[in-house]
Image: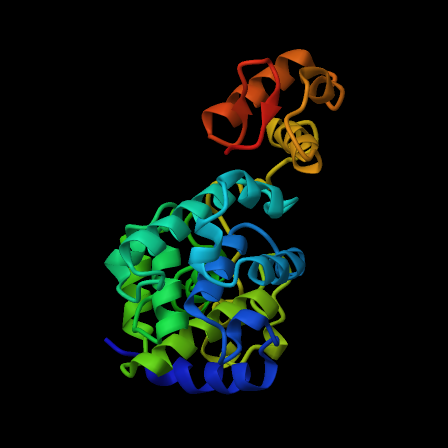
Length: 291
């Protein structure tokens, strides 16, 4: 059942409060939208902005990136984290160049078939780049809908079919309006209905929020743990990759050994980088970014 009571206040709020982000500009290409969506996965906007601008300056379309070796994508990814995203974006660029004549597809299923593009990213690109009608469910949207409609403080850890169905019932019928609604709800979750300190007094749908009207019952699900970073294999992998990014060519093993004291953890992290295709071990014992 379509529930329009949220539509107008959220869209009105968005028109007055949306951040001026380059991938939302009318002239942003579908490739620019795809790049932004991959970069924004588990990475805050403030860190993405400079990397996004540099990436599109160097590779303004998929064909430009497809001509480069994958190691250059990993190098340009710098410190955005989760560097397999760089390899996936490079592989997607090659797939777009080879299968779609260099144009990011607009069809959801064709987007899903691109390397590293999941259900969320496919829906986001189809919606934001092509104004198609899809339920776009990121963490922020799921939290807004959980509070406003379901009446719980946080959504389940893993996305459920019920959440998708709920999101689909709330989509405006007109595809361009539905696309605008999706980004507006996402922005509301990012700026107002935040995880730790929601600003209910500034929320355009506070008077229709089930969670607020129920007295804001506290979350009673499984413990929510933040992701540690210091001392983890992720940090170690980042240190190792940083050495390779800064080098203009292959590096000797001692250069990698110097950046992490725990030898066992260091070798485990290096092996994982090699298995993930982020590092190439050379026959002469040196290491390089993938070619």
